[in-house]
Length: 492
Image 1 (cartoon, rainbow, N blue to C red):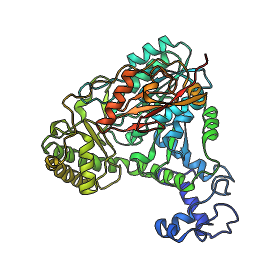
Image 2: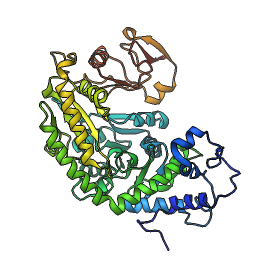
Image 3: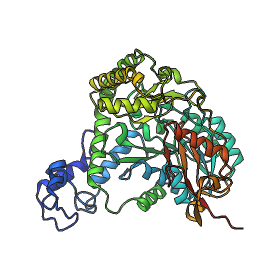
Image 4: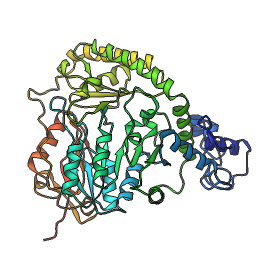
């Protein structure tokens, strides 16, 4: 009898193997616990160690078909409405690598939303695809990036007739949801598949009041970071194949295998099986409770002097088709301080740790099944205390607000050519006019300012430096202080 959504076939098979106390003449060396360091046994418990079982174990992922592992992936595809689903043990980053490797079977150029995750840029290096970047809509007041519009995608595809496909990000870090149906219609009108990095939206399929999820709107391949909201273990994710015929399951399967470990963690895969059951069977109830708690939390945050929140009123802004309410994005501009300082204060004063802090906005993330009422109350209390303590903190906001970032430099090499080709490290002052061999992404606003293969400009480097001086962070650079940069050595 086939497994149902209330079953966890893979996790059950792991538990049955451990319960038999078999002779473990295979890896890992801790042998299910006896060989583990005592501190590790105490930290994670004997049950977790007993379930740390290698791949290619009879009765789990090999043997009579369908194996428990195959059944678990089938149930995941069914739960999200996919043609096929794959468990990933290297996060949604693994999924983005898979997606671009799959698209590379169709051509050499690709349309990429510019505020893509760094793993998408890594995937450009791995695949060798040449990107045609499309700018997302930028909020001129909050200085945060929203989504790519169908109109922008249509223009890009018209200018890139040989494109192998297009990638989009939805939802964004800040909760903005793209017009995925419109993007899919445009992509399919040009005969190319649409990949959606829905890392922050694995929960969208399981509650009617949430925005519709990308697979249901026509996306051809969806990257889903299941651990972020739905509750699998960190680093556990999935990739889902849509119902269309523009991508072949066999090609995606080859790409999954190419970049996955040959020793995937059974603990991570087991957590995906369990998280799928939780979402499919109890997701509506759990999400309903979290949504009600978050509505109360938003109202309470608004009562803190100087604070506001982003909510469904954001929908309709350029690049925002809908809004995901499980992201609590807090507008700090009314405090006269920055998100950097407020995030530091709530951490130092109350051990409250936020997902993200920027110049104007901080982001708190809530999970599908957590007890969100006391969590929200703790957050609000910490915010109230931090705002009250601002008079004791040094001023951190300049008189002049951040201007929008300058235009990106020209792409003169593919990211792969720049990243893997001859390169050297030069002082910052000598980098202007050179071709970047690494990424620079400054917060605010979090859009990659420089990518491998782009010509470096003085304006962009000045902007990144200003963001760092204001308390921002720099991602992608070998030298996080920006004293030096890694640049390509161009042939003369």
